[in-house]
Length: 99
Image 1 (cartoon, rainbow, N blue to C red):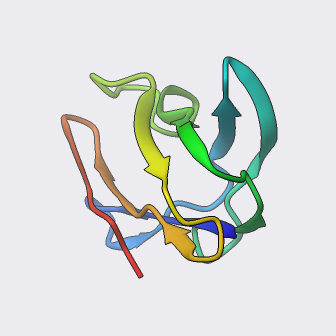
Image 2 (cartoon, helix red, strand yellow; image 1 turned 180 degrees about the horizontal axis):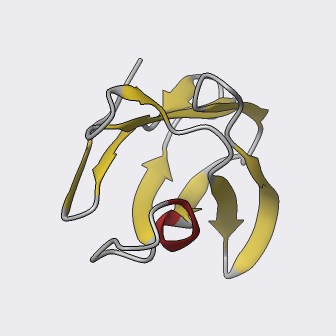
């Protein structure tokens, strides 16, 4: 199983490089890092179960209404890849199950 995310800044139309991201399972941080120059984090292996990916949007967009974006998702098949994209702006965000 692998996990990845891709964060895009909807205001600039560019990848959100350097944004802090952490992955949690069972109340524990199991991975953390920053998005790369293309706004991506990849290669994390969380395993089965319910997980939370937490984006530190307040540090990236200091004037944002959402200082943190938390997306909770369930890994049902540990053999599959799970991709959770985030489209971000100061007053809105959007996500979906990617491929």
